[in-house]
Image 1 (cartoon, rainbow over the protein chains, first blue to last red):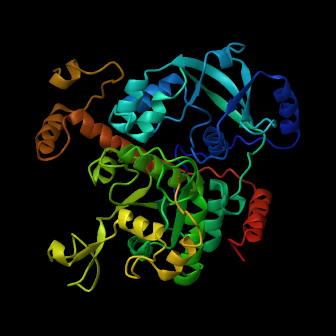
Image 2: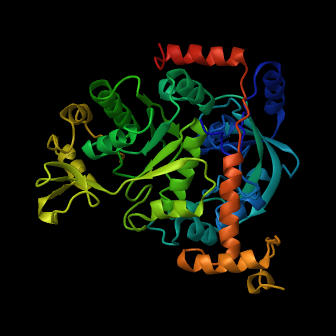
Length: 383
Length: 79
């Protein structure tokens, strides 16, 4: 099993008497409210999902990530993990002090942030470096422009967890590492997804599984863009797929509670690092990984891995699969010599359109059991 | 002898001495690759080597491991 990123699994979850003491202190500290997406990432940091991060980034790390795609200690890291705040919200605190983090809905303190730095940043530069564009039509760029004016960095201590409707699917890295060990898996391939599975996904997963011991299906559960599958649909569809078409001892389904950034190549590296922390030895990178619209070249998310010889997880690259009528099955441009007229592509738009009309996609495209599960929802897509 | 790329090195970079003959050999070799300088090639190799040396430090005790296994059983992940 690979060591966690940076060599040590971060654990900033307070327990027992220490937690009780800090909880009491937290009630008296100045407070800041964060949206669910930020709260999930605070929990991810505390449980080591984002090891070696111990809190939202301080300026040196933030700038290094923007400029060099590395933390200030040279470890690969491509997505800034930051908390933005308004000046008004933090007027009663200064660097070196503590602040209590609350969610939007609940009064219970979630964490304490030990403020190391409060700093300014350039939103346009942030957008251009992370997403490669400044165009607000890109969902990540649009979100960046809506961020508040300051960033706040420092270590966090987790006191409690937020509401989690997917508790039974939530495993932390310390748990997956023990799980993989318990299953006797020496090699584990991680699969990132934000979709209900079609036959192309299944083929990719099973191809990778033929030369690894186990498959870790790890859907991103969190804020997504309009038209993406709803979280509950993705999970139900995967449960069904595993039940009918996978060996129980070869596949594990657990979620990653974070938002999609749609940062294409940079996000592919980030996704790989997170799966390394979960204990994966390999990570599947397909066509247009974490992309959106036509913002990134189709295989840019594979090419970027050349820049990271020290990632510590092996990427497995797949060309886009399609069905070739002449070959008589699944193929891709590396395996199929036939022209486009014989090829049936896995078009997300086509699958979505059929499902929206209440129709099942052809069985060569999507397993009938999966389509039936999805069609139980009046609207299976994010509105 | 100062190499051209060393003179123009950015602030957050430093120098490592290697034999001039080796430098020249690398300079020739990288012409056939995507590396733009000997420095970027050397940094790549060092990072690759360091990553291989990374070792895991166990962060859980036997007692914690048992607790976690109990949760994994309760959730149906292990029998």
